[in-house]
Each structure stands twice: as C-alpha cells, then as structure tokens.
Image (cartoon, rainbow, N blue to C red; front, side, top):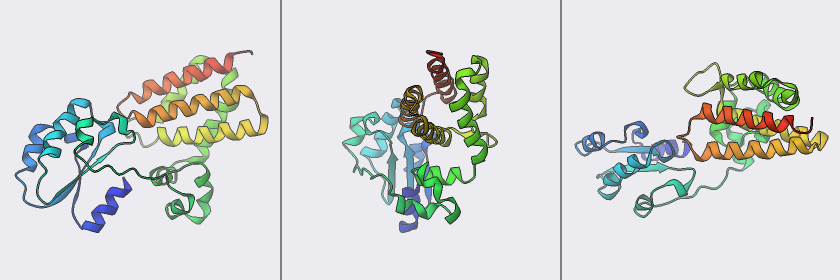
Length: 231
C-alpha cells in the first residue's frame, strides 16, 4: 500500500510485509530482534484465527517497532484488535491527486481507475485487449454459448499469472464499458448487468480470502443467465 511506503520513507526504516507469516513462531522471533522496523499486515488476506495470533503483538508492542494493519472493511476486523489500535480512515483519492500516477497521455484512465495501485497496474496491462474483451462481454454475452462465456474466467490472473488480466483492473474496466453502453442505449438489461457487476466488484474488494476464480465463474454464470432473459 502506498501509504506504507510513505511512512517508510518518512521514518527511514525497513518495511516488512508479514501478511503471509502471521504465526506465533514468527512473532516470537520478532521479540528477539533489536533493530527497528515497520511491519505491515493486510487483515483482509488472513483468517480470523491469525487475527487472534496478532493480538499478542498488539497487546505487547515491541520497542522501536511500528505495526501497520490494513483493512478495506473495518467490520471484518476483530473488535479486540480495533480496541487496541489507532484507527485511521483514509478518504477516497481525488482526481487531482491521482494524476501523479499517470503519464500525460494516459489521463483518460482516471475515468476508469480510482486508486494509485489500480492506475499503476492498468499501465502495465494490455488495455486495448482488455477493453476489447469487456466490450465483447457487453455486446455478445446474450448470443454466447454458456461454455464459451465461462472461458473468459481463464483470461484472468488469480495467482501471479502475468500474461493474464488482473481481476481488479478487469472489473473496473468492465464497469466502465457497461456504463458507457447503457448511456448510449438506455437498455435496462445492460443497466441490470451493470449493477450486478458493481455488486460482485464490491464483494471482491471486501473479501480478499475468497476463491477468486470461483467468484469469477459465478459472476459469468449469473450475467449469462441475465442476458438470456426475454430473448
């Protein structure tokens, strides 16, 4: 997260992402270290059992050590952790602030992507290919065979498959394409699929532990069924 890098630069300390190492043995080792560090945990990517493990660290903080816990949904964080931390709720980024993360010839991306991470990822993505795929979903889903619709799930990156599309960038582009299509046609079916797509995107953002491929296949099944209604 960019805010973590900002804090790291200000404090001039090493930054350690311990999201994949939230276990008692690792935390006990931390107590034996003498050098100051910043430790980051993405709470949306660990289970409740691991959040309980973190309590030891939160209740007995180390000297010269900073712990940053990141969560997109405060409601999914254990109250025992919230009660022992300083909670900072960050405002949404403004367009002017986001211009820092795009080149002058890519400012159109600010209409589609709304966080620094998404903008950075989008600029290393084959956006023309992704936009073509999204408009194909918008325009052709109603005439596609169900088996063909499901193959779209194979084009999405679920585990560092760099030749495929980032799932978050995909959903943001698809939402944009659906909105553009609805504005041009005022088709109520497109509007329904647009709203459903936003629902799935929100669920994805709030539940990092879910099986993303399963969610993608469920989404494609759902919008394929919606597109077949009243044909």
